[in-house]
Length: 278
DNA sequence: CTCCTGTCCTGCCGGC
DNA sequence: TGCCGGCAGGACAGGA
Image 1 (cartoon, rainbow, N blue to C red):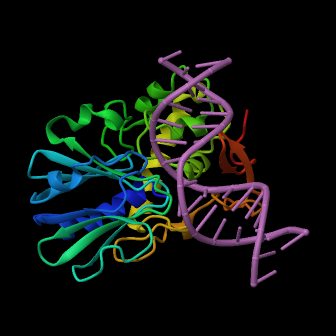
Image 2: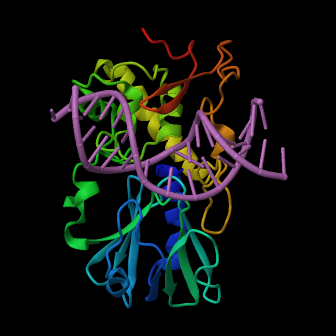
């Protein structure tokens, strides 16, 4: 489910609930997530204060006062909820983690598929640790340009769609926004990544930035699972051009009909008139 | 190195 | 109504 815009909107609405609060108690129901949570998770987290929150790619980073970084990934179906302290810990099916906070609220992670994770890294060198050490640039970063993208795609034989999904090439892009950005840039998803020219890389970098900024402003895309911690849905789904639009007429009024095909076991959607294979 | 395939897990939807 | 196959927004290991 959650790509960069969804993760960022979750982080933003979570931040005021967490920052400067103390984690008075942690309860773990299931540790066997995509990455297994450490056995001493509860004791490492309990008593720590939350200094701040940030995001890298699709990960939410919760900076603790005790030299640890709590790293949360929502996988495909993960949600973070803020509930009153009086709520039962195991209230809903697939509630796996609860953090009791000073101030009378709890943060609960719910994830039916358990593709998500919560883990702890050392704060001082988290950027050198596993998922982050090789991760590509942030598409919303000031230094993310067509030139940078072109450089990272150079020499790649694989198709541009799967390259965009590779977190080590660009961070935070998932299936929806990869399809949408390629459409906006007028690039066919099956093109070889290394064959893009400068103008195409410029358009693609710009499209990624603009789409993600707009999606964040809309609270992300809710197709199914994604909800903000207060239960609200993201509204960017109304603005999608090609994703899950198979058979519909292209929004560019070119007369083309949106096609669906599978690349790397993932559905791709595109307009055959606006995105030429060449 | 690079790239592709299969797999982890549960829920939902459509077809019969 | 019930069962079954297919599909889902992600990431990683393993092998070619």
